Image (cartoon, rainbow, N blue to C red; front, side, top):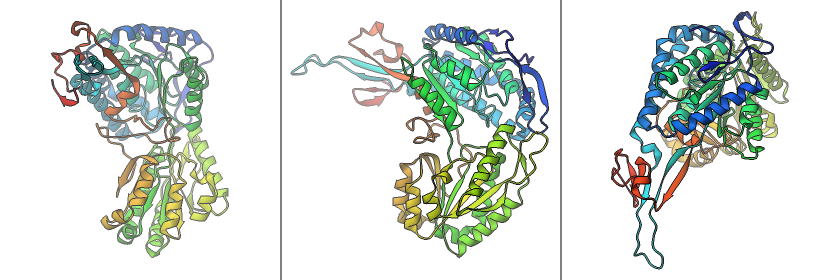
Length: 528
């Protein structure tokens, strides 16, 4: 595969236009060829029209055919994995072992969605038979199922150049639903995006899909991204990134003559609650586990635990002493981009300047040749200060966390009640403490998308039951998930057929159930 630095529009390449932008190696600051040219307004228009044309065909494909497309994408990514991973390593400074794992996750979730749509139960097919003898009015025959929305724009994330990017979860779930995809790649890894994009383009060709099933347009979010969101042929958006970026897309989508849904994951501080019994039993081990979670991948995970609550005690002091030593000894790491590193450093300095907050470790490392080196930072404050300073709930994206010392259980509950919506919350507790703290569990259940017990939030299992979402501002819509098979429902809507003759119904709703799907028929679930 040859890197050309040009957008992919269906089966073609865009023409070079405007000032080129190079990819940058964050470890060295060196430019990586080739230069990349941003898409034009004409490119946006062409990709949107191709996607709309493709939708009229691909939405009618049976699940098995769409599954074949997803599996072919996975095969081509695996076949080209060494080249993709080498480029991703240069563009992101992520180690090859991490990128190999991410490749496996990317291909695994593509195949998971393929199996899902082959089985068909996700369609939520429902049939209520007619009853002409019902009084006082006859009951009609009513049947419904989920149907795809239309072309979807996917914004790649910075921190997962494969699993949350060009062929990541948003793309997999949208294609599985029957929606063409236009990807706006992240500017931090354009070469990786092009290589994966070429795999998707080839898979579309190999599977006989209409060319508009996939396009990839380079450009800035404020220009190309917003133009895509505003285009009248686009019907939904998937986004992973900052709150500012997500809000801009939400506002643009809401201001359209026809508003569309934006499923934006916008960050989280993922609070951890260490209850006294757990601390008494495992203070040093909890410090070690938390340190590993905070610094994993230079802290560049949306599930990074950026906030920790403890009740003051001798065990809490032992925990904090051990955590301070571990954080101070953590060697600097290279962040994904110089801009991200600059934002991290600015966030650290804001926390350090806050009244009542003590910087216990870090964030004084030299930024290095690529201006992307960062070291771990630890802050400590008391609950009164935390409750009085909303800034301390801001996300500092990187290897940083804030420990809040509470004087009582009631004070910890008060702090939990002040939290904004989060992706996760974690409770470390003995079995007896979990029972005694049901009020804390219930409170957090209303604040987060995933509750963890005696673990750490980094690491998101891709499975049917996973929920990777949460109330605003963690995501734009807390009813959805961006990980796991339930993600497919973001890009669908229910369609109902009333009193249709059997021959005119979709196969999924025909009386004989030719696809042998699980369906809800007259209130009973089965393959009937």
